[in-house]
Amino acid sequence: MICRRCLLAEMESEKPLYALLREWLAALAPEEKAASETYGARLAVCRKCEQLTNGMCALCGCYVELRAAKTCMGCPSPKNRW
Image 1 (cartoon, rainbow, N blue to C red):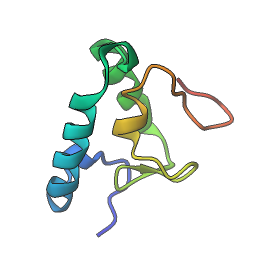
Image 2: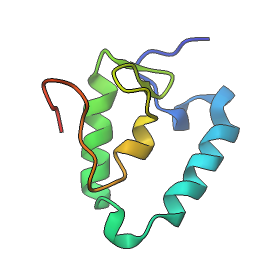
Image 3: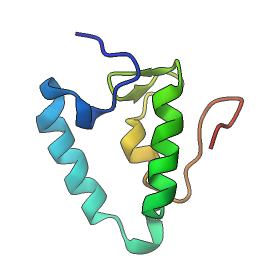
């Protein structure tokens, strides 16, 4: 099933993958993590993007919940939304 504009956290079929993603996020060094406000704002932008499908960015193939969590990452869109 394809879910447009869905994050992994919202997809029942992707709960095992989301559990792995949470482990990876927990292992990030504090200096690598975006602030929780920044993370939430980035995900809000991704949720509105037409390129988000099944929690993945169609432009770069990343899981947006991972990309948004790292301070050094940015939006891969030519419009650079965040």
